[in-house]
Image (cartoon, rainbow, N blue to C red; front, side):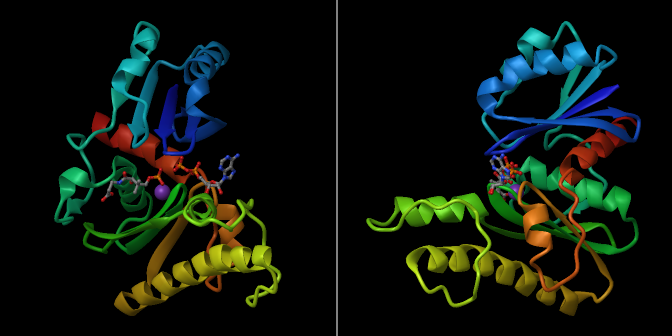
Length: 242
Ligand SMILES: Nc1ncnc2c1ncn2[C@@H]1O[C@H](COP(=O)(O)OP(=O)(O)O)[C@@H](O)[C@H]1O
Ligand SMILES: CC(C)(COP(=O)(O)O)[C@@H](O)C(=O)NCCC(=O)O
Ligand SMILES: [K+]
């Protein structure tokens, strides 16, 4: 039994896998890391392997206390990936983006794929039908947009994610909601329209903490899979065993 751990910049997402079957997902903040990991290992004593991808502030040393209970492997730049990396700065590419790209290639062979991960940041990753990873884009995520409008101005309030009623916001709050939500929705639809000009037949994977919220608001019909990074971690781990 495998525990996949995705350490993002906002939250830690984990999933228990028996081969390719996802049994349960646990999501928590970094502060609860040791407590939650103990809880999961006690509830699933059959977990004998942990695989980790971290772009956040959890390091190998945070796992020292668990090393006598299960085998722990970090996915890193040195791991095997099923694509050619054409990024000009491969050493600075986020490991989460590499795992997403690996999952997209393994799950959807012989076609081009766009992975959109709406987390702390929104990342776009494009892998063409010849399994070349080309790169994509990084933009601020929903929470980051609301926070930065508040933090870098004197007058704007900090609001929580809410569906805007209109494109034309008729109050400060409605203007902010329209700017953040309609702005991001248009950004995503705009990127998708661009990628369509490269290749009409490509698969789009939408994941991350805001995937469900965004999927229903897009012009393009996309099914969200919030667990895609966790599933990709499981697949990348298996790929590296071979
Ligand atoms: N319970 C939650 N706590 C924090 N963010 C959440 C929660 N539920 C949904 N979100 C949304 O998820 C986004 C963060 O996504 P997540 O996938 O957890 O990020 P990361 O992988 O960068 O840690 C935020 O923009 C926020 O709007
Ligand atoms: C862009 C990211 C911060 C996204 O992190 P996330 O939103 O998943 O927490 C992460 O993939 C990262 O640190 N990337 C390094 C820069 C790059 O990918 O080029
Ligand atoms: K992301």
